[in-house]
Length: 73
Picture 1 (cartoon, rainbow, N blue to C red):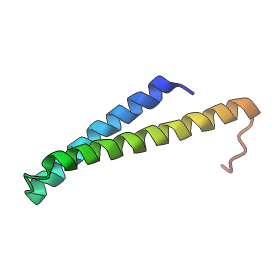
Picture 2 (cartoon, rainbow, N blue to C red):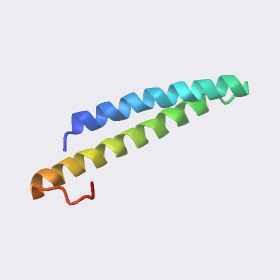
Picture 3 (tube, rainbow, N blue to C red):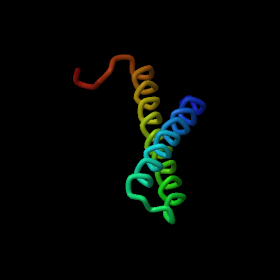
């Protein structure tokens, strides 16, 4: 697996999650919880992005290892 690609994907989705967190904090007008919402959005974005990319990398590696894809297409 390519760790650099997984980390890059996690960082980019963390930035997207942080921006969504900022938007939610702005819409809800909760100034006291803004930091927690942004950190939560960034963390959730990183976890989701890294997991999705890791699954894609695992599928590519499995396809290379076994030759044909055993998934239904």
